[in-house]
Image (tube, rainbow, N blue to C red):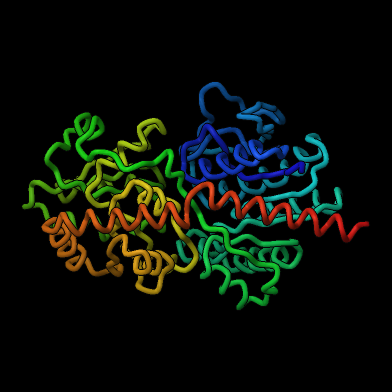
Length: 414
């Protein structure tokens, strides 16, 4: 089966989304399928083209059997609304031309966000007369509105109409959680059009490792109780509560808050830490993929945070890497969120609602005093990951879904 896939990020970018789409594409090739992946030149998260690449109209490279087509798009390190819109728009439009030059496929699969990408995927599927599968990983425009990124009422109406158009015209919609499925059902999407394929982590790549390792030694974290956040520092990350909790815990010299990542809020977070002279917080840039396992293992507690507005429209994929590393999760999310539900059902961590800074600080101290409970929660997460959220399990679901759509289309055209 010839599969056409498209998303803005693909290897060598090391953000979790790019890792997942890369793993899916390469695994489908190993299972005997032909995969063409149309994407942009690597530039995330800094908005600068990676060394060794040029932002050309069209270029081709091969990665583990995947034909990777890189197309031109507007790229800028500035993350203003209009620059983001221009980036999404140019990339989404160029995907159509990238698809035409890449050759006909048997099925089209696109990721959302960005929403406009679905238009090119839909047009290609109509041109080739093949099914189109829409993979929804954030509920847009709701997520952008909740994060405060999208406030213009005209733009909100436009993207809401675009969202409805995509849901109506997609042959199948793949969602990351049951909560997302319920959201689309409330919007009138037929249930037979929807399926849930969870985000995953690879238990063969992210494994339980000793806590005292070279990552800790390199950053002077020996004998520290490390509370780690690793991921994008964006509008939904809700790290304000974490910094305020760190302020309350300054006298506990053996507790270190480690914030790893980049994003639009990093400068403000660093500014707050400097202003409050928080010596118990350290900021690091994204770490190389080859050190990822040791980095995850170096944590005593791993943070997953979302603000109240975003809790129903996002499910950070970092959650599953934490589970794979057999480390407990400390979530800062509303109790009705997808993350809180996952933690409560798998017993892999603790959830504290946003805005309860004292409770967050108290929870950290309580967990720090019970290492046996931390170990048990980490082991619970690892076991659930292996059974339900592993790479092989989820790729099986993806492959079955794509093959089923291809067969249905073949039967309907004969």
